[in-house]
Length: 130
Image (cartoon, rainbow, N blue to C red):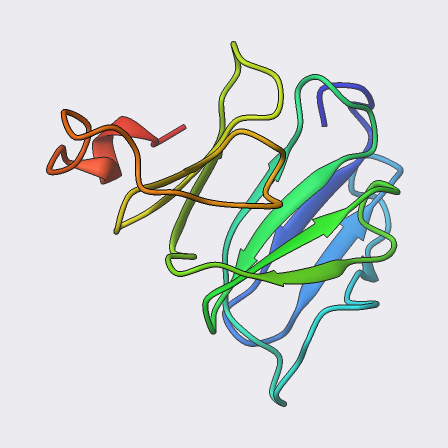
């Protein structure tokens, strides 16, 4: 978390999300509001917004994007077509990228579109890796 070094959120391969607010001394489930199909979903990525404190994005499976506005305590789940890769643009506020089918959101994940034609076809795995 760029605003709170003691807060870390991790996703698992089937056991849900976990969060610490004390630098890892203790961990608690962080799944409130996430759609779950027991066992819990696989989490592909967790990204903190570098411009807005407490804003966190995660990409669980099932073509979903989940957004937390309170540092990972509660989540809203939205649909998107490509959840496996997710990054937040560190230079442009509100810009997210998903993949492997490249899509871009310029409004913090509310709406995704396919990017300009010269972007399509690039290796998105390398483009948005953090």
